[in-house]
Image 1 (cartoon, rainbow, N blue to C red):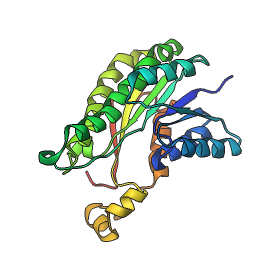
Image 2: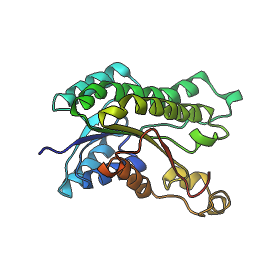
Image 3: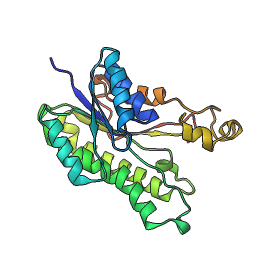
Length: 241
């Protein structure tokens, strides 16, 4: 029986790579997506293959609807994609009073419009299989808001509403749709932005999360055991909210 295919957007980043590796270990044939970081995506796919698992790479800009559609049609030529992790996103922080239109548009285009560009073309083939899993990676900022991130919080909160609505549309088709909303997760950016004493002050668990912990939650939501969980926004934030 062929493996189910899973597309992970933004698969070349810290969280994306952890999700790709975990889903491959779970038995998915993983498609590692990237746009600007193609070499990183290839390294991740090679690492997965070296472990005896299945991975390939797809390079396209999810903010470009036409380019995304063309890339997905090429992927669909090999059969339906039954699992999607909408992980790609970008920060371009500024107080809204000083935020440019480009800062707003770029962030919303990637995180929210990208969700539509990637997910919509894959739905009918997925529906035809009567089984699917869609998980979008949001942020605590999309739940609580955050200073300097009106663009990012708006895009991520938009994912919540879109996912809840899509979950209702697909619930009778054996397809679940959920959101994972991380707080502070270990990365180069987090290390640069937060000193240990700041983490102690704002995170009740007094540590940042690990990408592997986010990947474990995504893995569960992608599993058969999570078949009755849909339309949910699940936080993973060490007790921050």
